[in-house]
Every structure is written in structure tokens, then in C-alpha cells.
Length: 384
Ligand SMILES: NC(=O)c1ccc[n+]([C@@H]2O[C@H](COP(=O)([O-])OP(=O)(O)OC[C@H]3O[C@@H](n4cnc5c(N)ncnc54)[C@H](O)[C@@H]3O)[C@@H](O)[C@H]2O)c1
Ligand SMILES: O=C(O)[C@H](O)[C@H](O)COP(=O)(O)O
Image 1: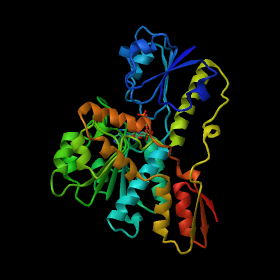
Image 2: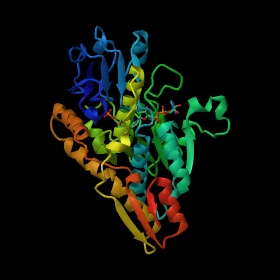
Image 3: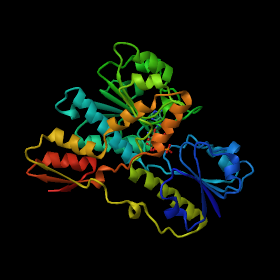
Image 4: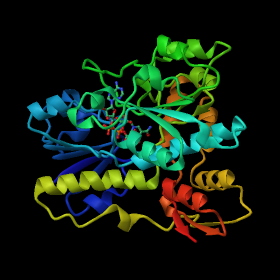
């Protein structure tokens, strides 16, 4: 069986080597002739999957090792009897850690002694938003949830949701919706001139969903005003050809890597491996955990002398500091349009190994119970 796969999917041989012959191709430039003879197609988010790619091919199973599915024409696949599977939640924890790290840097720049005094509006409360909300709640932040599709469900009567308008009054507004069009609560350009107008210079807007959820032109216009909000973008309209002026205008600019922890990527591969095995009736023998190496940084230690807020931020940013990705993206924005787009993709292809907080053992000596709880809330392993 021929399996055509995006070369950026990690551990292809380890997971799929026993299932079939693997042909690696560039996900961004994959064409119909690359996949014509394949029975299985494995992609990430940069490959548009629909009739242009698959008409006339032998493909009967498509797996995307990502949470987002806006690159896949699911209706067409279903109409053509092609089984489809995604990887819901695979990198939700990675994105939550990205947001926490961004918050920690933002609080520090603002001179806030206690970062939990920030109110946080989470827009889109699915796998990512829920994981983030759980961590923030446990840390003691004031969290408000905005998810109109969920708010309409009968079994959600116990959860209190706010409108987008109200979420956008929080100190921090963080977007985690899918990209949707032509349906109730569609998110394409959901944040436009009117929503941006209401944000003040004291507020932070984060987008780690999809770039098209914010209207780029409206954002650029808002950011050129003196009272502009602080903005952190991980996702962009028309990736990889992103707007270099917008990169200059935002506070923190990263190349769509919020979900790029090693754990997140490998879990994505594992999820489509499981789905394919089930589809083919093969036993599921492999799991992500067996392929995760020892982390480069495995232990940190704090004593009672540590400032509690500082200790959390030091440990968080030892695992992941978004300012490194921001610096790399800014450097990559030099050159022609084509060079910039290639550089954006290259940053993602050659992304350094990043481990999640759960890979770091934190030793606490003589520290308070509340500090221990905060470390646990984020997901660190504790040694007391
Ligand atoms: N930056 C990254 O690296 C990265 C990583 C993972 C996922 N993502 C993106 O984040 C999105 C969310 O991921 P997830 O796992 O939480 O997905 P999910 O499907 O579990 O949850 C999405 C939530 O958004 C809600 N939603 C839909 N329309 C909305 C609207 N108009 N307003 C508010 N909420 C709305 C849905 O009801 C749902 O609860 C993905 O679709 C993907 O596009 C980005
Ligand atoms: O949807 C997702 O899971 C994320 O956006 C994912 O991190 C995208 O990564 P890519 O497929 O572009 O490598």
C-alpha cells in the first residue's frame, strides 16, 4: 500500500513503516500527480485537500495530523467515500502553554507584580480554549468564556458564557476558534474594525486560532492609531505569504507554532496512526510516549527564597519563550515576497525541539502550598 505523506509529519517510519510504503512530499507544494497512486494520504494544515488534489486518485483514507480542518473539503471526501480523520486536541496543551508564556511576558512588561490580576477572555472554548481555561482557573485568573455555538447547546446550561463583545472587554482576549465560513457563527473576519475599535492600549489581543479570523486590513488600520491595543499573532492571513508590515506593527509575531511542542506533533501523528489502523483493521501497537526522548532540560529547583511569580515565569519560559520565535520571524521578514514566504515555511519546517512543561521536573524546597498548586496547575511534575 502506498502512503503519501507530508514530509513534516514526525515519526512517519516509526508509526506507518509496517503499514505501507511511505513516499514523503512537500505538504505545501503537493500535487495530484504526487498522490495519484496512493491509497493513503497523510497531511498537515498546509495541504489543501479536495477534488483538485484527489480526483482520479486511489486514495481511500485521508488523515491530517492537526487540530484544524479548514484545509480539507470534508463534504467532498464524504461524497466520494473517502474516510477522513483529524487529530482533535493533539496540540491543545502546547497552545495553552504558548498563551501562558505570552501572558507571563506581557505581565512583566506591564510591571504587574501579580499576573493573575489580569482578566482573560477566551473566544472559542473547545479543546484548546478549555485546556487554557482549566489552567488559568487553577492559577486564580478571572476567566470569561465566549463560545456562541456551545452556549446554544442544552447541556451547557451550567456553564456561563459571555458575548464576544463582553469577552473583548477583558485585559487579555485570546482567540481559539476554527476558521469557518457560510454557517451560523462563522469566524471569517469575526474580529473586524468595530471589534478592534473597542480595544484600548491596555488590552492584549492574542490570535492562536486561524489568521483569517481577524481582518488584517482593519487590524493594520487600528494598529496605526495611537491608542492601539497590544497584539500577539501566531497565525496570519494568507500564510506563508504573510504581511511584513503587520509583523512590524504587532508586539509579538510567531510563525504559526503555538501547537509545535514535540508532544503536540507526535500526538498528532499517533492519532492518525490509530485512525488508519482502525480503518484497516490492524492492531494498534504504538503510542506517542514511546518515541519521546529525554528532554534537554529535565530539572529546575527553587527554594523558599524564590519570588513566587518569578519562579513560575522562569520555569514556564525555560520550557517555552515566545520571544525567540518572534526574533526569528522578524529576521525572516527581510527579502522579496517569495523569500519571505519560503522563510516562513522554513522556520516551521526546521522548528527546534520544544518540550511541554510536563517534561520538566520542578523541585521545590520550603516553598508555599500555593506555589506548589500553581506549578501543578500548569502541568509541571513536582518534587517536594
Ligand atoms: N496556532 C496553532 O498552532 C494552533 C494549534 C491548534 C489549533 N489551532 C486552531 O485553533 C482552533 C481551535 O482548536 P480546538 O482544538 O480548540 O478546536 P475545537 O473544535 O475543539 O473547538 C473550537 C471551539 O470554537 C467554538 N467556536 C466556533 N465558532 C465560534 C465563534 N464564532 N465564536 C466563539 N467560539 C466559536 C466551537 O464551538 C468550539 O467549542 C483550530 O480549529 C485550529 O484552527 C491553532
Ligand atoms: O491545526 C493545528 O493543529 C495547528 O494549527 C497546527 O499546529 C498546524 O501545523 P501545520 O500543520 O501547519 O504544521
